[in-house]
Image (cartoon, rainbow, N blue to C red; front, side, top):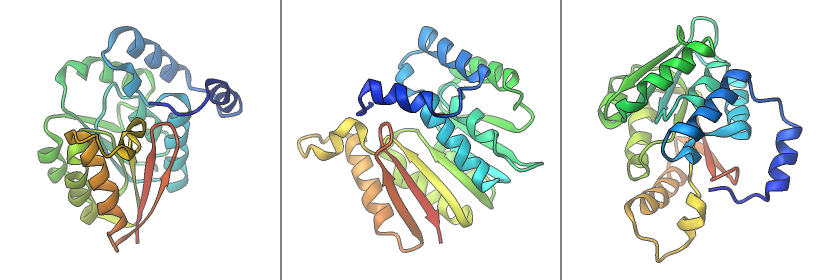
Length: 212
């Protein structure tokens, strides 16, 4: 999932703001107890999500794909006073660890977890939305984008994770649903006149999309 040299990664972490204690603990527990721990955002990406949120000072954040809650906690750090984050997760087995670390990080009053199908639950979230983090099933990225974009304010930002997909998006022989879903997504965004976008080769690729 990571293309960067481990020594460069360590150097970047050394000269980035430190990982907060609650997030470091969540990182450890996820790696010890949860399947597919590489899905966790981690130190550098987490600090980047936090910084985006602090720059935007969002009143409402929507996350599609919670996993163990690391990225939600990072983004909640930047919420404006009285702001709220809604995060949607399909796997109910992760609910306990999510709530545990929302409480430990002191964001439980600002973060609402919804367990269910995001293609259904995202439709229910009212706008205006300031910030979206998209990190769920890749074959539905286009659908999620089309759901959330009309709900977003002008200047609102969508961050879509894993758009490089370990480089598989470049291999035309890769035709699985998730790889093709990511190719379709970046093409769909690139052709949308309502947004500006930049694809950052950070970690596994993050597409930053701003509504005009």
